[in-house]
Image 1 (cartoon, rainbow, N blue to C red):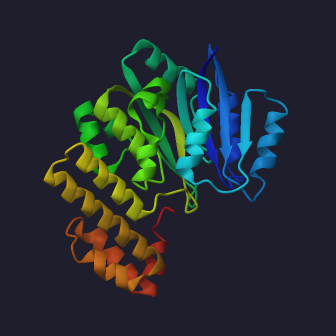
Image 2: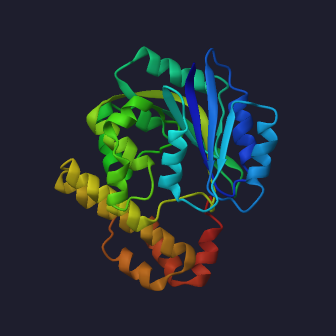
Length: 302
């Protein structure tokens, strides 16, 4: 019986997928696991590379979509093909750094049958500089569960290193409702529904590496804000939490404006912000001046 499915979504991941797959195949476990991949109509060599692995490793199950489904629909389709008790979700450009990562995650869920998921530590690799920031979510994982939930509600947690109990997803997650609310991604919604309705575990140990680069998938800011506000209403967040959600959105939009020197957006999103003063002022200057953007780009990590 397959105990764990490693769930991977890919789209034009040719530069990274080999490292991801190799790190999974090399895992040391005392149980059987499968690697279930949903490719969302890649136009590069991603599928060719994956197929080179399927010829050698029969645990890899690949489905290539003829047209782009989008993140949420690809996630659901891939999840439905998983034939296991547990689901470990990892992006095609990230990788496992601990050879016993999968064993660690499964052991925690086995020992705690009331847990709907476990979250674990990860390093952040910055593609542009080639530098690694170690255990980037250390403080989050070493906090209390109450603090973990509070942070997730307004910021969203890392979504890297989570292993889910499949039956809990079936019990607490309503994908049709996500579609109805026009939520087009899965990580924040799933984790919110699970943590607000069930118990979970935190593993304060680095098991994987998150690759940060400009081509990394990121949610559209308006879609992410809409999802947060939907859950704020669903679970009756406090007024202070809702205010913080809007502030985080404004910070994100100001940062984006600074990258492309969008003067209008820079003025719009800088005006309501107060903290952190220096960083936001730098972002504002970068949004208003092409020369300032070029100068401050020298200090960006990605």
